[in-house]
Length: 203
Image (cartoon, rainbow, N blue to C red; front, side, top):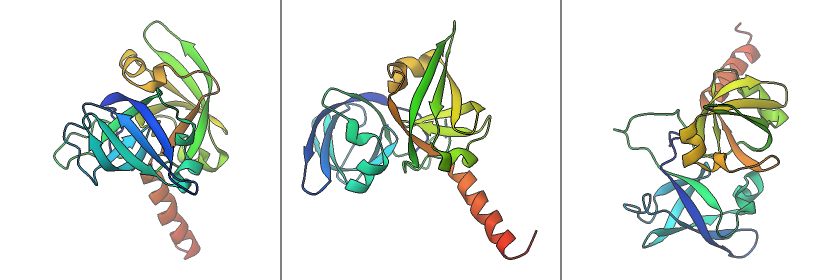
C-alpha cells in the first residue's frame, strides 16, 4: 500500500527482456534503495513492483507481461525519469490517499495551461474509469496522489503546484504522453456493495 506522495525522481538504467513478454527493469533511486531488500515493494510511476535485487543505489524488478500491457511501463527507456515511492509503513502519515499500486488504465495528457503559481493539466480518461472519478475526489497519476479539479465523460483535470511540477515527472511530460491511472479504490468498493444490494432487491 502506498500514499501517492512521491519520495524521489529515479532514473531507468536499463530494461532487459526475460523471455515471453516479460522484462527486468533496473532503476536508480538512492533514497528508496537506502533500506530496500529483496521482496520489498516500490511503486514506479504508480506501479507496485517487487524488488528482486539491490546493487548500490540501483534496484531491479520483474515486470510481467500483464503489467506491460495494462500500464505505460513498456514505453520506458534508459534515462527516463520515474516517480518512486516505498510502501507505506503502518506508523507513517497518510499525506495523499490510499494507493494500491494497481494501475486501472492508461490515460494521456490532453493539454497544459500554465498560471502564475500552478498549472492546470487535462488528461484523457478511459471510458471504463469515468464513473469512479468525481470533482474534488482523489486519483493517482503516475504514482502521484492528486485532487480532481474538473471532470467530463472522457477527461479530468488537476491543478499542479510548483512542488509537484518540480519533484515529479508530471512537470516535464508533454501533450500526448501516456500516464498510469489508478482510481480511488474506495469508489470501487462502494460500487460493489451498492450493486450487491440492488441485485438482492434491497434499495
